[in-house]
Length: 145
Image (cartoon, rainbow, N blue to C red; front, side, top):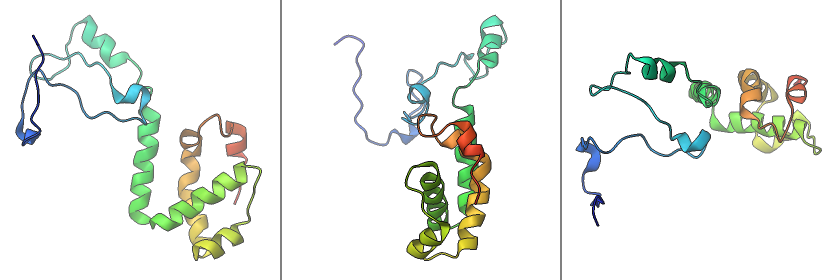
C-alpha cells in the first residue's frame, strides 16, 4: 500500500522518525490526550498568528493534570492504603450508603487520624477529581470529616 509503513516493535526507543508525532494515548484526558500543536522545525512554537492562537487556546485537561499531580505528590507522603481509605470515606459520604469513619478505620486497620490527614490532603482537589455526574460542587464543599 502506498504511504503505509509497518513498525517492527524492535528497539523503537531510539527512533527519531520525523513522521511520527505525539505522545501516548491517555483515555483519562479529553479526546484521549490527542491534541494538535503547531511548531516550527526545531520544535519551538511558531511566532505568527497561528502560534499565538495555539498558545492562547485553553487546555481542557489542565485542572485534571494538576489534580493528579497533587495526588501523586501526596502519595509520596501518604501510604496508598491511607489514600484509598480517605477516598472510600469521601465516596460513602457522597452516596446514599454513608459509613462512619470508625468503620473504615476498622476495616483498613488504620488510625482515624491517618485517614483524616489523607482526607485533608485530598479535600482541596475533590471538585476536580469527583465527576459532576456523581456529586455536585455544593455537596463536595459541604463534606466534613
